[in-house]
Image 1 (cartoon, protein in one colour):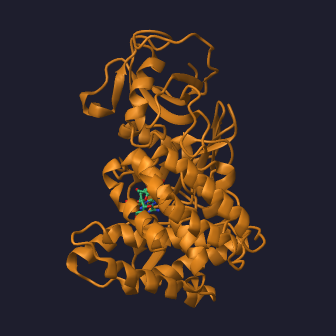
Image 2 (cartoon, rainbow, N blue to C red; image 1 turned 45 degrees about the vertical axis):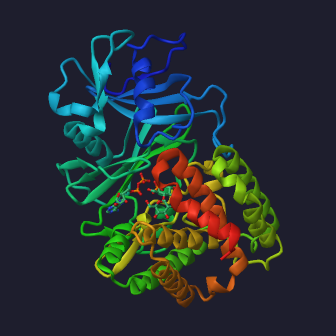
Image 3 (cartoon, helix red, strand yellow; image 1 turned 90 degrees about the vertical axis):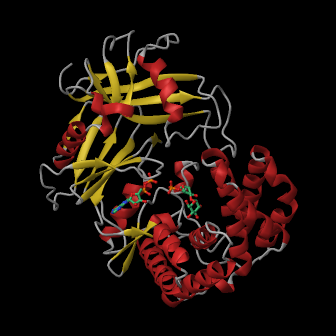
Amino acid sequence: MTKTAFLRPRSAPPEPMESLTGLLREWLPLQRWFAGKDRPVTDLGVLSMTELFPGCLHVLVHAAHGGVPAPGGTTPAGDCYQLLLGVREHPSPRLGRAIIGRVTDGRLAGATVHDALHDPRAAQLLLERLRRPGAAGPLRFECDASQQVPAGLVPRLMTAEQSNSSLVYGDEYILKVFRRIQPGVNPDLEVPGALARQGCHRVPAPVAWLHTTYPFTATLGVLQPYLRDASDGWTLALDALAAGDDFTAQAHALGRATADVHLALSSAFPVGAPGENRRTAAAMTERLTDAAHAVPALQPFVPGLRAAFAALATCDAGPPAQRIHGDLHLGQVLRAGREWFVIDFEGEPSRPLSERRSAHSPVRDIAGMLRSFDYAARQRRPWRPEWARRCREAYCAGYAARAGWDPRKKHGLLRAYETDRAVYEVLYEARHRPDWLPVPMAAIERLAVRGD
Ligand SMILES: Nc1ncnc2c1ncn2[C@@H]1O[C@H](COP(=O)(O)OP(=O)(O)O)[C@@H](O)[C@H]1O
Ligand SMILES: O=P(O)(O)O[C@H]1O[C@H](CO)[C@@H](O[C@H]2O[C@H](CO)[C@@H](O)[C@H](O)[C@H]2O)[C@H](O)[C@H]1O
């Protein structure tokens, strides 16, 4: 293969287990970032394969779920995933669990493949490609010409629970390699780029990025500055709870930071009409119906939850719809020095990209963060509802101080958005972390029965 060889996939009948696709079909569902865990993979096909550098293939695969739509109906019956595959005749034993298997059939017969993001040499070469604009087959590497990324930064793969995979380089940059790929620009490139142009300092700005032009145009990865001494809000909140510390000053500052980001977003992107509550309520009700189908534990609460959405339809119009974060929680905010920063603008991973890129009520983000204080307070026994209540108050007060309107005065909106978020969390936990299901279920019970 030449350095930029791009292999168009061959259409072929289902291959045996020892083929590359056979191995990947077994391996893919075991990965943390695999989104289709609740449905069997009925077929796996290679969409594109490009040699990134010798011994490393960039591969897009399609995992089909045999016509079984995802609960919630938001994803088609299959997804595209991005893989970087190391190909070696004699793999180093140091690769350990990164090894996917030995291919005995097809074009790669005789080679052992591994997840190349675990291989420091491959990670280094990937950064080298990103440092300079260029192309490899359908892949395009672009960068902010005003930034100089130094050569030779030492990579490490992050071990955090993630929806994607991230490499940290020399504690100076972090590269997020998107795993589930959808056509179009990823909001995690689009939004931080637009906010940087607004001069918003709350969001690390993209320094370099990678996209593909085949089999569709899509963002594949983004490099941004690494906030070296940062702690995420989730860790800080749990530490505060463990120590019995107050977290209201932090929550207040976080409310202000959220409002800063919302204000910058409303300048950077078109703003819609104030909330079309009736349509939003209908969409929330539909999501609830689908979720209750997928997670039967929700069913007894459906009437109470529907009441929250019915009430939304009659609420006063709230703040105008605008671009928002879309999946705001304590794990998406980093405290560095005395400031809060906001990361990960992808939105809720299971929603279609077009929906994630459209305008929504900023109340959705606020509700996401309020739910997160509740999640944190439920990590310890006895549960600390008072801690969560005070954080929620402080967060809303901080938001109001900056935004000029107070979320606490939008009770109907807030209740509906919190309910919608808790329904999403039930689905998320049922799919990814069934042990955590009681956390959002407790909120479901509260919102359905008491409505507060
Ligand atoms: N710019 C950054 N500086 C420092 N840490 C970061 C940065 N971006 C992400 N991280 C760390 O990486 C983790 C995962 O990032 P995130 O964008 O949320 O990935 P994912 O979408 O895969 O969950 C975060 O929780 C945070 O700890
Ligand atoms: O992977 P992402 O960070 O994009 O978000 C997904 O995973 C989150 C968990 O890692 C999940 O968040 C839920 O759990 C958090 C605690 O781990 C809690 O702070 C959040 O409030 C709660 O929603 C998030 O919903 C999901 O989209």
